Amino acid sequence: MKIALAQLNTIVGDFAGNQALVLDAYRKSVADGANLVLTPELVITGYPPRDLVHRSRFVPGNIETLHAIAAEVGEVPMVVGFVDINKGAGKHFHNAAAVLQHGKVVHIVHKSLLPTYDVFDEDRYFEPARIIAPVAVNGQRLGITICEDIWTDEYLPRPLYDVSPPEKLGEQGIDLLVNISASPYALGKPQIRERMLGELAQELKVPIVYCNAVGGNDQLVFDGNSLVIGADGTVMAHLKAFESDLQVVEVGSGATNSAQRATSTCDAEELYRALVLGTRDYVHKCGFKSCVLGLSGGIDSALVAVIAADALGAENVLGMSLPSEFSSQGSKDDARDLAKHLGIRYDTVAIQPVFESIKGQMSNIFAGKPEDITEENMQSRIRGLVLMSLSNKFGHLLLTTGNKSEMAVGYCTIYGDMCGGLSVISDLPKTRVYEVSRWINREREVIPWPTIEKPPSAELRPDQKDQDTLPEYDILDGILELFVEQGKSVGEIVAAGYDEEVVRWILRRVELNEWKRHQAAPGLKVTSKAFGVGRRMPIVQRFRE
Image 1: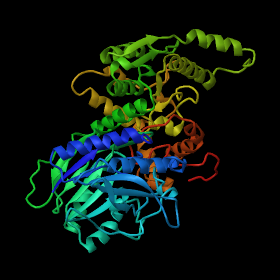
Image 2: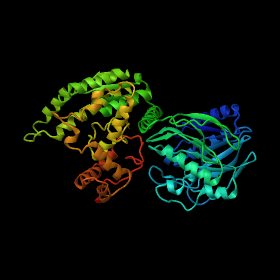
Image 3: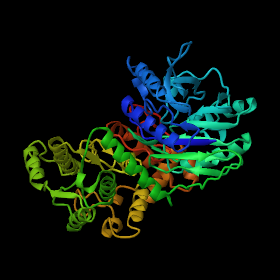
Image 4: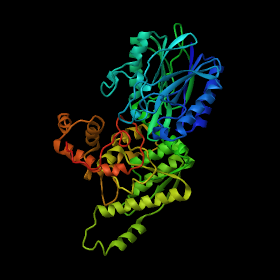
């Protein structure tokens, strides 16, 4: 059996555009000899549609699109993800897969396991399947599952469900297990999926065909990495990572395929490619063509500039140097050299005159008060004003450049360097920023080496260094990973080898700065737990570790 996996990049709510992608993939697959075509989860609506499902025309529109697609499907069947209406008790809708053939819908399968943790809230919208049973397609008994349905207990945060759809399907006898998915990326997750599917195929003793979505939608990045796994657990085919892809794969006894492995060679490359894809799709899907960002000469803005130039084209990136009296000549030179290496547009607006003017206007009110963080933040907010003005005047999307470590402890200025429409590296810890930046420079200098090698500094006062007020970044990031991503307590973090006073200081800073993060630009999720949609903490609370 030749199965086509259409790894598609959809836009939420773009029924016409998504329909065109599906039909184009179908026609190419049939021409290439496919006997069955698979598309990702909720391919008609895009994933995740969230509260759009409650808009009066949304679900009916997606069903109309389903039937329009079905009308174009001939003898070769296709599996398409869509939102179905629940005709019984419970939630209004089902997350569903339809089998289309001979111009009509011949089978509908509903998702059984509805994830409601981290970034997922499917139980808010969908009713689980009432029936788990194989469907007959061209003489084959297919077990059709949707994303979470195949995730086994040992690969979930904890055992969450009292039913296993693959087990139930296997007990009834299937020739093939199919999974259509929209599984968001996190570092290391593609490898986890491959291992899990290999074990499941061996357990069921049937091949598994896994078709995943690709692309960025809001804060989520979908990495593709669709797979075909043989009954013995070996990888028979591996679609591209972070790219749309379409492959026809022969499945079954005697099938011979050359499995293409994931193209990322290390964590740094994987993270970089995820951020490029997420940035490109966020900018373009929001209707922007270009972006602007401040270039301080520091490593964070340098990395964001590289990502932006790769994602959008150098001609569509404007880097702005916004020096004050505290900006070192080295930093100004590094910003200029970076722009030259990337070929992006570059300009300078000195903020010192504006800074002096505002301080003068405030001098009577501030009389008797020494200069402190207030004046430091003024500089950041002036820069935000300039960058937002360029965004307004020329239609650029402003990219913010803060990293996860800084966002965690509030080492950022609300209405200053936090201004913008997308926070590109807000889920990338500072140590990972260095790792990815060095990977970028593996063959030639793209980011000026002084930017990577000098001590990090906000340069808002004389001789300022990040470590004047923050622990060393390897310590900070180690503690943050245990607290934010793994949910460890003070005692558990201290037992891992960290100083208790430092741990308590960091955790308190994380708690105190929740209000800032609630006002931050959306950030691209690339770790197992990001600030934003997957971490919902109250601002007003008195719980202490």
